[in-house]
Length: 328
Image 1: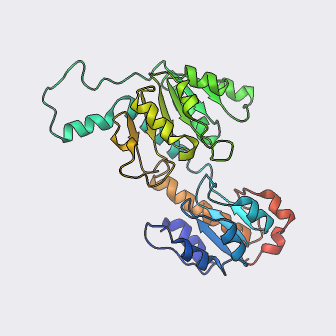
Image 2: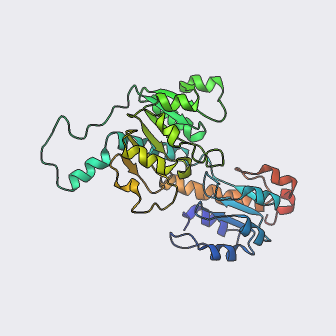
Image 3: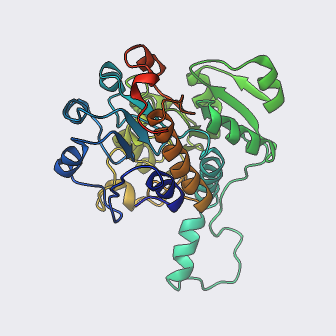
């Protein structure tokens, strides 16, 4: 079920069929429904692969309500003249806020303390050693990936008077480094010097298991790892081992290799990790805007107009927008 703005925009000009409920459509149903449609507005839970794209003979546009698009076979879509769009930017602030929520929750042991209180274990009004966490002020923050969200993280870190290191595929311009008071370093240096490491890269062949056992060993035993990007960017087995052996102090995770995470996954038994069910962008404002932008992207293509957020611009040389246009 999509937030209202997106559905209403589509229903004004298109025949729309909406998957009702919270669960994604089954694989068979998704392929069957895609057979004759001109456009698909999908979520990260929908696998839009070569099999589906090849069977959808009328398909002109796939609009994903997401900032990541590893669930879509963009190469096959491009070859078939199918435009692929997404919704970056609109969830930046919500995701940056939630990243900080995870970071602060784990380093100040908020979830542990909440559970302790609710279980009726609070017996002493105040104790100097109870639920000791760590300060943020003056510490070093390492940002892996300085896109929109990474930059928003850096802006917030300035309020905590933190030293900010960053590693990204492309170094940003000097003016931005000065404005954000950030320093470009190697990934190895970032991991070895940071008190907090936060990940903001898309999932790709290059970034899968970017944080593996060897790189976790480079982190300080007092450091915390925060991931609100994609689960497979981190080797979850290696992270679990590092947390269990206290080779790092803790982690805050909104994403996992397998989602939903198995209730019996070893991570769920550890006190030094705070976990959330992929909700970093889950504000009313952000999700409504994501749905609206996804709908507008889809309608732009069907109107023969350049969509605001196009993943595969090279598709226009295979099927120009003038050939796609079907609504005014």
